[in-house]
Image 1 (cartoon, one colour):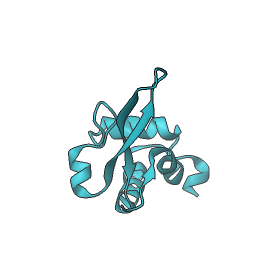
Image 2 (cartoon, rainbow, N blue to C red):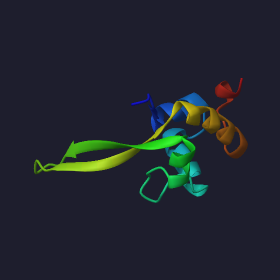
Image 3 (cartoon, rainbow, N blue to C red):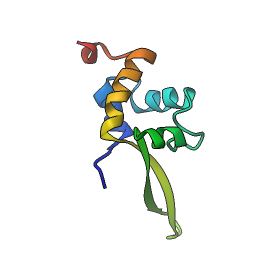
Image 4 (spheres, rainbow, N blue to C red):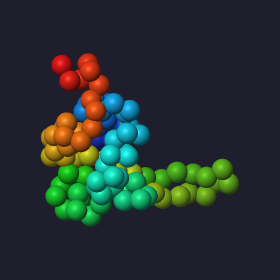
Length: 95
């Protein structure tokens, strides 16, 4: 499995103002994330994102599976350019 970064780290690396939540909103707005915050089929086919299968245990002890979007190494380069074009960047990150 190739190394991928989570959305929190991707937001930090790109320096998007508003952090992880702003990154999710921006990607959703442009159709790169689905309504359930999973990566769109197009982003997966391009190799920019993937959906990682995760597990959590509910309060009643039942295991629940869910998908979490992650950025691939190829995708981080694309994401930097995308954020520069479509979002406000923190002043310290722009320098």
